[in-house]
Length: 136
Length: 81
Image (cartoon, rainbow over all chains, first blue to last red; front, side):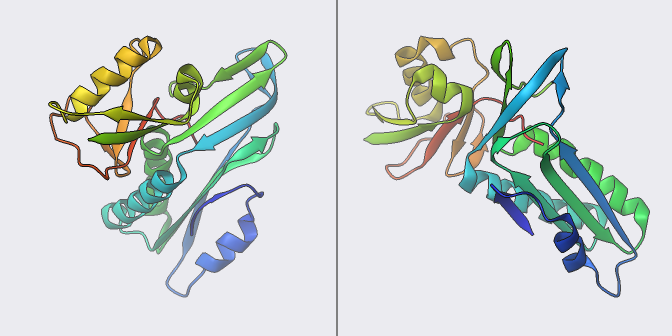
């Protein structure tokens, strides 16, 4: 499943859909909203995307990773809209026969997603608002 | 030829609009369009500009010529995840 959503991410539903007889491992990465960033308390976060391109980019990452790491399936679900501390931001789930290739693929996807998928985060603190930079 | 440009995130706030149109006549290249954008919006000159044509990232110095119905988007480095 590749999706941008304004709703919370249903981790159990996504993982259940990925279970198949040939799958022996599902590696999950879950990114969440920090409550503190650089000493400031985060009040909320807004996530914006260039939706058409973001979906296309995430599908491309999935296809490359399946080929590159030999995993079975990959789900990438990213929240957009208004989020609060502790909310889920992104779920990446990788199913494979064995765990090693699943861990590698999952790490590669989150690193690539941060660089190449057009999604941006804006943090709101008591001191004001700021767009998150890629190196943060 | 008129080309519609979409802006996202901090760039949308800097230029104070979501999209606008540029006239490209003699120079229809991507780098030519970027020059026009930064002339109209000097605030973008100090920014690292990402540009997508038809939803694919393109090098901003590319001399590739744009076509009438191309969808162009300009935005900062991604920060999702």
